[in-house]
Length: 454
Image (cartoon, rainbow, N blue to C red; front, side, top):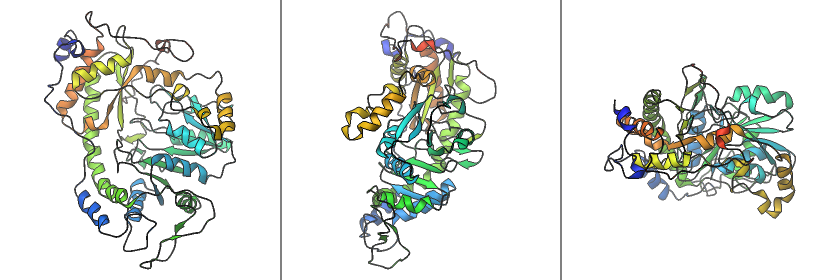
């Protein structure tokens, strides 16, 4: 009854009363874990603020590496200063020749593609499944001659890494997981990051596990682990000795590296935050399931389809997809309208990489040959799945799901109110064309299947 009444109410964006009381706060982010202050204080007085310091007790970086390897079910974890750095050293560790192709999804943050350039390789963009937002074997071009594939777990859904691996293995393609948005997600019981040959994580400010900035590579490959250490620490890795007042890094120098080391303060913070992560997952996932049930009663609105094999969610962003969009509106208007109703930021997905202003390799003369190959290989390609989600979805940050069930009621009521479309008094709408000149509505969503997973 509430939703029915709201569908005819004046929108907050047009001066009407918002669904949510403006004085009702949303959960804040980030949320420091119990023990975070003690961890940081210990580093402050330890005399060791970086791994490139003489040994005086155990490094927080080594402690976090062991904790995160156990959390992801892998044998090795090499922390880095950023998630982007994790991708760079993961690709460099494969030893691919200069200019080889790496398959990257068209709908992801630009660092997934720019890391490929930084490793001396060429990203080849592939379309995503409009139901999941992830690469799928059916979206891959078999004619693309690639040596690696980066499978991004997008928003709150995992890519089917086993299926992707089976599809590309006959061609000698290595699968690297970009799990920057999937800490703690599981696929048939296996943690995100443990499914490909290498798994890369980001601990940037907005991620579910954060130290402000940070990253990590995990792997079960005993031959790659020491190479990864060298690549992130200027050709040095941890030596066997544990003597006090002696530098723990040894110049093994089997491969030239760079300085991508995680600082001790960030590592200590991650040790504390990791202990909180699963409790936060439980709250978010409970609220997600509640919202899923509430949205089921709103025609033309859906969450991403969660593959049955994904038996645990990790929510970074939660896309709400409108099939179709409200009359005469685009999803930018929907995001603004929902933000006004809820008093929190609702936003659109990032511009697909084929037309992203952040992916312009030709602006860097030093990589001109790679840029020319990138431009040539993408000539005439289209990405209807990525464009559909970019034009039909709006996103909520995972922090919105750390509250109570009433928060989900508010979100569902706001969606029901906005889904009816702009009222005659509110005409602030516009349409956006795809790069090929067609309207975003030209892509028709597949008919819904009743498999019990959104």
